[in-house]
Image 1 (cartoon, rainbow, N blue to C red):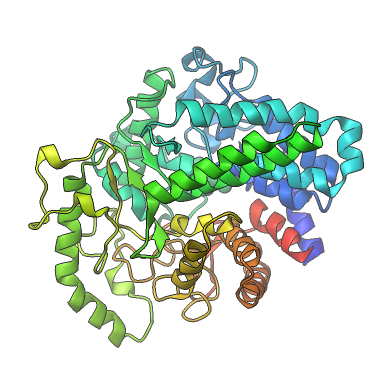
Image 2: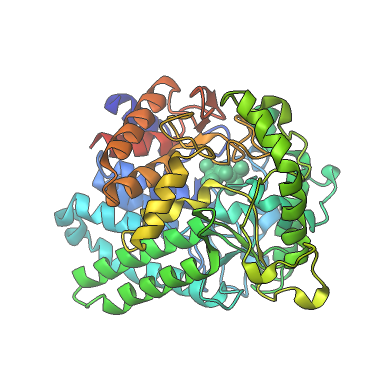
Length: 497
Ligand code: 9WN
């Protein structure tokens, strides 16, 4: 398996970085490169360092690390949206986009400092000889500064994403409500190159794409300045990865002779904000906060409606004895209305007796999105999470909504009992290896060793049988998306070590 994983990474290596897949994703992606470097360090610490350095070479002057760095030798129509859509070097000039390399204008989760630290540790001698950490540290610090200063759109200390592609789980049901307010770009305005390589039923819908395009085009029209866009969401996984990376940056600072204390303290403050703003004790998991959503619009009223119908829904599901509710799959991108039985995923101050809220009652800090998505479990990765919260996350992971060790051996990307659950459609149910890797790490960190071992074994076995698939059906392990996917191979290597 080691040799086959290495072969996948060799095949996807371009000389300076690794594509996620030559067919579906023929450029360099930001968080992919971080996960890839974490695996590559076991094969070639030099290549792993180069992977991160290439990405950082495309950093904007305002500190953002773009989510795609385009390879100029790949034809424009091979991937959409292509460089002529983003127009980074012109539309992004005020924000300091590089002139010589074309990039997208949005970001992805900040896994990079964590990756840089792990890459350094794989071969400290080579790292020191090449001055790896002294070169990447200021860039990583600028990246975190951008997120903390330009993206605290809610003013509560957490970072917001301004596009679903930024969080990395493109069509997660968490985005359905915030996206429903965005007028989709007409389908004739773009051509979906992804459908040349991926099965339509495994990919986001045309309606999703219309909204992705509208949001990105609006961001571009504003010169990629942050603040005013129609989509702004605080996501638990994105923020947890920032916290993990801030701790890693503290270790890097120490290695370079500083104390790192201020960075650890900042990570701790971020952890407190994460809990304050996104944790729901009754549900035992974190939720996204939709900053543009009034509580009355995306919250209390819907939750009331959902819980009224939930009795029938849950008994129907119980009678199926744990089999996936395939006949209830939402394949058209429409908003389900009754998917969250008995939710309390809203702060109590947002609820009223009738469930409806007046305009005055709407909170300027938005509302939690009552969808159980795997991003709400990712904070388990943080060693400094309060113990009771970590214990609750472990219970939720193995409970009926995620079924780990019971209904499933891998962790689904979305609530098994959720109305929008679909075992094949991208981030609406399938299991992904990067998320499995993060949760395995989280379980191990919190000394849940049997569960961590079982998840590790399931990840390795499924990577093997699915030929390093992009994602898999969480019940059957059946391969979805592309095979020979880089982060699946890379994280397999890491789990093998
Ligand atoms: C848009 C590259 C990327 C991953 C994302 C995944 C998918 C892109 C797409 O592929 O997103 O960025 O075209 O669908 O959702 O997590 O980084 O592998």
